[in-house]
Length: 512
Ligand code: KIV
Ligand code: ZN
Image (tube, rainbow, N blue to C red; front, side, top):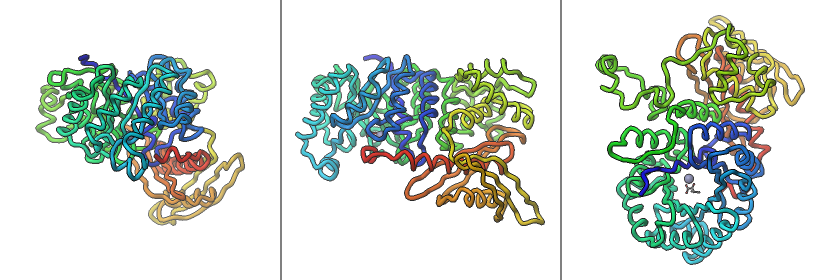
């Protein structure tokens, strides 16, 4: 059996199902390009039956990627499969991923189907999809809570019908490693034609065991891992790509498995996902958390200085965290900026470069050194965001120990200028109250958090807000050397994302 593990990234599909993590098409396209650079083998770009927006995004990604297989998700109906195919048919390497639930619980309460009916629907779906393309993945949703022998039966039937990958999901994050490894071994041993397909696993992190379950399954013979960057995804998230890849990389001596991931792109990709989705990475997150390579205890610091291997099992450079980052300053020219952005994966048109250069100069005047994280913010805010409903034109704050905090704000609302002033408990509260009044929003602010984008007192403040309106949740993100401006930008970005969600309704397909 090969020791190569296929990395199937579903950040753009299951990852996007994280509450509030909606991404627009430009953001999805940028992320897809980055994932190709990272070296994922398969990229699940979306669920085209869910909405017109999803179909469009998957279709654009399919047209852009050259080396990566692009997968589209579909239920077992012909309509879903047709939409999936419509979205990926022009990809260099298309894949249709069809799924149906297999646990008795889902059959009885959700699908109201018998086991035989589920097998028939799966066989029909795979056979039909196979008339369209050669790469078909079949998933048994809630596989970890399904009857083992039924799983073997349905996988055998799906492979017979033409499935080239069979995926065993732990949809609700219920499995524990020994049990999951045992289930994978059982399925491999008792599905007669299993050698004709790749066995895949797809784990959720409800008990914090997604990575452990995935590694256990790979050890038992699975050869595809379905993962997301930063582990984002439905509820507690999916298995995180960086954890699986670095576990295989670091413990190759024990696991004897490898991937085609270019690990030096792990950290930049993690940053990009967090910037685009607004979902912060917890500081103590394995591999990509801000503290993952920080040594606090004196004994540890002393050891690391003498030999990093005393307390570091991975080198920060391996995941793209370099102490000697190339920095740009206010004297850097357009050419240096273009070359550096190209190195970061951005191939900009002259017009785009002019816009970024202008913003770069403004930032370089406020901040001595501009690093990659700062440039990512400029690109995300300046180029990737769709036409915003609300734009910040002007913000003036009066605050201090002896005055009532007050904000004067000018907004552009769909091309119309509005301005006003308001008070608050503090300067940020005053800014938010005034913006909310001018925007006429009903959104409720659920969460506000702030951190420094990089080290140093001149670092940009990075703010994340979470807003809710009529059951919709939107995240907003903003960065600026001035933390009140960063907060206002994040709030306005949240309001714009809320508008985007309102104008891009999902069909009931997205509610499966
Ligand atoms: O968690 C799950 O079961 C899924 C399937 C659609 C693969 O996301
Ligand atoms: Zn899932």
